[in-house]
Image (cartoon, rainbow over all chains, first blue to last red; front, side, top):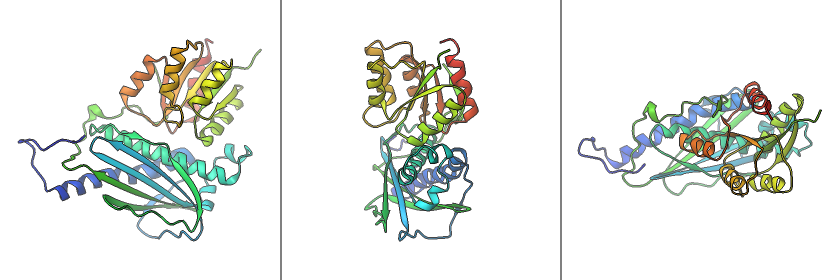
Length: 197
Length: 124
């Protein structure tokens, strides 16, 4: 939601404002990835500051976008095919689906879940975002696109044989401010819970 | 006794295969559709599942658009539960107005999903 500061709203420098807003959204990403990996694929991970992306391995990458008034985000998920193969569900492994298609789809669905969680977190801030469908690709020695503008942050999530890198990219329109989170606007349906209309 | 058929509409094969395994293990028949367009073509071709588990955000045709087309073409007799990452109450209300019977936010829990399927197919 893009709005100009009112007379009652303390104004912040634009750079500070963007940094704080980015940090809020980034916090949602860091919280979401481990819980979604555990819930969807039974894989426990922790966010780690150690490690660097080694794209010399056979990799799989998935990208998904979010767009709302005043703000646009993308999430880039990157992992080795061997790592993603460790979390492919048994139902998929035994279905006859080629292994490479399976790892693509698993990472793509994880990107979808992550974007969905961030989108739902932003509802509390009165930000109604639309998300794309994920685009997933396999590659050896993938050249990772470098964002030309906006703000970005990389995160590493690792546990056991699994390791994944996630990059959040954001762009804000001038004057965009993230409204304080309000419980009344938040999603009150828990993930997995069935709501009967 | 005929097997109760459930159509799973999701562009993720991971989701389709996981749901198929859960549902077939519970005695349901499963029909898969890769997106709303695929599902609509199957429905207009005569396929009539008792229940549809429907994702919202899909290429070619999303879940809400499919519900609209089903409404426009009077395709009835199919209960629909949305299975989606979407948590926006406005979208839920829209789906409800188009005839959806329920909502589950992903990631799903197998036992709760199966319970929902059994509840929604019990009177069909």
